[in-house]
Length: 505
Image (cartoon, rainbow, N blue to C red; front, side, top):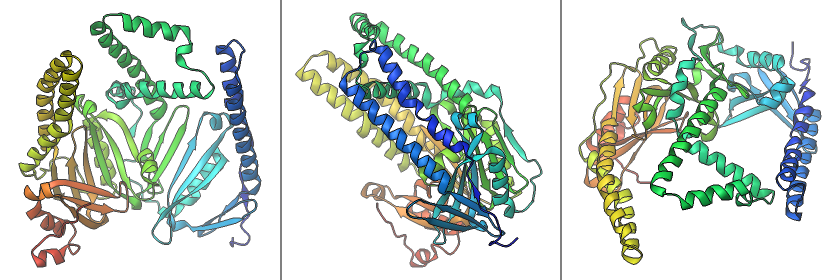
């Protein structure tokens, strides 16, 4: 079928219902505000709710325009998209430039049986972009996804399913940031919503009584109990969030030579990463998760969008046991090279001055300013703060030394086969495995302090993932030789000159 005869297709008409459903937000806010105030709304609340309703009405009108003026088709070698009302925009993307195709559906879209299709593309100038169709019926989106990825071939991996949902992993959910951070984030969001509709939390009687009782009680007892309560609520929330994000999870190599990730309970997500765009993996071990023997896995791949989008789409394994994370990493890398493995490789340690730098950073950045601030306030206000300063110093110094040693022990790098291995971090320890052929350039960065210690931070630039991966505080005398061994020819001129050019930034 020629391009001229290929029929144009439109979005699903249920797109309009999805947009209109958002009008429930201002109506819900009005109902909650009326309930909280006994039906009495001040002028500010009415103005705020009116503005919200008008904004959502505009969004709904925009949805109608999007539905009426969006057309697309897939020809033998290109994907064509037409959009716009006053300014018509036509976009043609060759199929070989489509890097990944994601399907996402929030609860409203799932209720109406539609999904959003996002196709990550590479521009002609080497940049990246995204094609977005909102929204398509689920069968139509699956068919379009298969059409866009059909060019990738049919080489099937020997063991296509790398991982699936396992309820035993729920025990790792409380070992994440959301145990405490999620509670405070939810409280901040609730405060913002109430403030926007003209309500303040302390206007509610039960909130005022809680704060009064808390202030009149023995703080040495109520503060630990409050922290335990926050931890308990946060743990429950972390488990709920884990289930919402990773329910029905499945990671597998598909017939079209892509790595597919499907997950989600209320909001479903389906991310596809073409094997040719996969550049490596990241074994991530946050401090709490590492203490519990767990880890997560992220893909280093081109075409996943900007940094924020990349962080959302690159997650391929939820918190799980470290052994399982290593197995998944091995399965992903084996899909690229049969001899790939993360196990059994010794990483080159970094010089001892790197330990001293981390100890000094902790002392100067944390211990000294807090101790000094408490000491000054104690001299000006009350001697109790002087005891607090001394207690903080006694506790913080050994903690900082332990963290510095842990961060130092984490430093390492190596070359094994076609792979470059980089490890660093203590609060979040990352072990990065990169395809050496994906490294485009090297940057050698130092400061006056690192030059005195003969250390340099070497960054491997790649057109994927975080764009660059740093080997922190390696020996300045070995940096250029290591870079040249990893990617022969890129830094050869520096070796001929016998020096390394450092660029501080």
